[in-house]
Length: 213
Image (tube, rainbow, N blue to C red; front, top):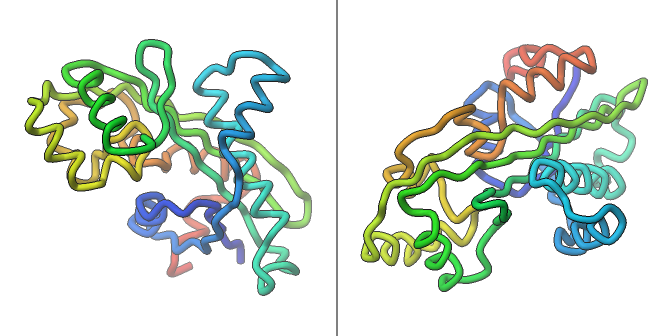
């Protein structure tokens, strides 16, 4: 039996897997994301948003792999999955806002416009023949033209502070997203079609991970 370990604290990512019939193990990484990106920029120069999220997804998986819970240290049936998301708007990339003021500022910039939500996926196969591979899901998101009052009310809920790009499509932010061009699940934070492809690359069918298998 193969088990999937999600290297993420995101409840939305876990919920996406559970809704798809997969009950993942969960371990949260202690990666300093700002430090990882700063080191990469110093070494390679400016990062493309699609590469930045993939780099962070990889860093999360590698950190969790080095610090597995005691009960999993000797496991030989694990696939580790890390994800990271950022919103690209006007060539700039945005992760989670640092505070309510920044979330408000972002929404005033985003309203009535389109951005691209990039979600990097990194899969580490720790079974008999270890392997690592990754890819990024990129989806265009069209935002509604919110009023100042709607922005203030949404930010006051606290939800935008906890998510990349300061919005959700599966929560209170859903009414403020007019259109999506691409994979809806990628915007939530984990692309199921892309996960299926990555699993296939290491010889695993996503149906093998269903709870009743």
